[in-house]
Image (tube, rainbow, N blue to C red; front, side, top):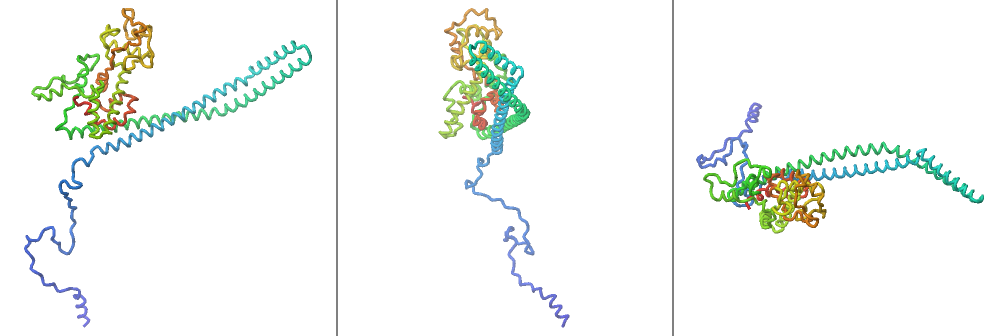
Length: 455
């Protein structure tokens, strides 16, 4: 019986296999629905979700911004540059206040030292004694003598009190001098560190903007390549600035002349080669080109178009001012400038500007400062010319209109200094004036192709 119970307990958990139904043909069972043996599910890879074409979330190529990381890098780097610039400005202000405090301390110490000088004290007392003697000799009665004696004693007391105050002040200033020097030195080091950090942050911001501009320009040209006009090469920008460029005025292009189309090139390519880039009429004051470029950048937004017109106008003004600073001018063939070449005229204008008589960009002098014949003679001499050989001198009434007919050659200036219109070249070209064009630099990847496109 015990053996029987053990056998039943051993085989009691097993069930008799149920009667199997006839299975359908193997070909009729989908492979994806087949259940593996022993009820164990095999690991399955995630199946891709296929969205209907044109539905929500469908890939259109515009949802993913390939320049997004560059844009984020620009925001981070430029915001850091702004903060570091503010810190550097605050550090310079603290250093200025510390130096001003030290200058005031030095002035007080010098005056106290002069007042406490024994020789000065002795001289003041001697003067009081002489005044008393003169008063006593001129006195006719005893009361006048006593009055002179009292005045002499009050003067001696004032001298002694002033000397004691000067000695106390001198001791206090001498004790404070070491602390003021340490503070000024510490703030000077702090200002230098903040300046270096601000310059490094500004350089990082500039590099990030250059990378963003390159990314945006590459993406924009890649998308619009089938319909967009080809960009004019930098050599074309340089070559179209003047009718006859010279070796001293315009650098020679590296490649062949862009005005000559290649053998077998289509007619439209030759037409594009003959067209001048849009930046040249823009710098010359063509409002139609300004509105067309602003409309292309705004993409149908009227408010954005007005903002872009303002930004492009600010760019033109900054370039013109820098061209005036660099004496990039074109001179007429009559009047005072007739005997001189264009290069000699620029040297004379640069010499006048160095003397403080700067061209205002219209037909006169900035700030109303008009040179005389002596200053004009000095400028001609500084330009390497002999003033004695000049036969026609402008009169005093003609000197305020010396720059009549002179024009700012901003196109030549840009072509020589930044022919490729890269962001780095433009920032270097404009110098401190580039700081006011941050919005333009952030979108330079969109702006540069339009400026280089045929007008």
